[in-house]
Image 1 (cartoon, helix red, strand yellow):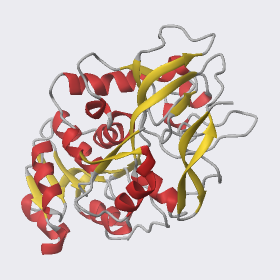
Image 2 (tube, helix red, strand yellow):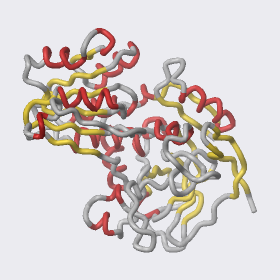
Image 3 (cartoon, one colour):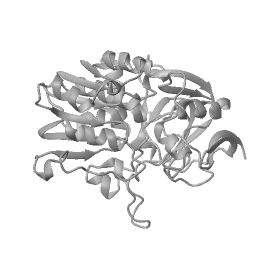
Image 4 (tube, helix red, strand yellow):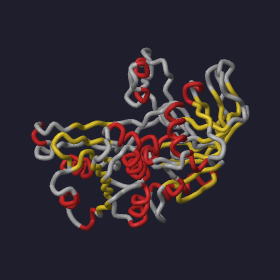
Length: 357
């Protein structure tokens, strides 16, 4: 059986480059040859043992590639076609999908519902940090890449861009809104861009790293608050003349930023949480207005499926957004362990790394 190289989770703090068989293609599947992928912050949670996955699993959920082989029942696609697939790969037929919540696709009635069930790559099935990737339910999940767009232009679509945009969408940002985005990592930067596209007229980014502060302004931030230079809540309230923000987007996954997001909301405002949390959260009484502030707290797992991917690529193709500055480092798959070390320790100004087999 032909084999391929893949980044394999062995145990906490150990992801290694190894060999695996190239997957067999079922009737509804597609095998894509990966041309570019990347490492996500969630992969680092897996590496550290903060999010459990099975030993032996191939990691990664941000694939860009070329269709190598199509299942016998797959229609509407051709071998040799450039495609992406979202980090979330809904079947389109589950109860969650039919209720309109594709990201919570679940594991089916036999196994019961699993939160985040729509996230399969690098979670419940082998992922994208490999030479080949098997895409399930291909007709629901493959999205052709428009001619003229490079791999790196669409590399953020499967997860980072989709997640960041969904923070603004779930928060129901409206024209004229004031929005605070806590943390300007790749997801926070895309949340900043998404808030601008949705009509926010005052966007306050929270960040302390100068390079990220600069990119945040390019992505649409009107103000950048440095949390190392004073109380971030006081700074944001001063910028809003004490009114607070309509929407706060939490893009880091920590108690401090979650709580600060609550404290800067206007009455009736929304906290849109995108962070992946590795410990219990607490909601302070004052920050929550004792439950009487008409505030909303909403969480979002990035939408997936081919239509979501088409829309995101349309935003890039239109020139309304350029995510290429988010790719700061490039590695061959042979150096994936080195790439993980760099990304996990956030050295050398890293935002995202492009991995090419």
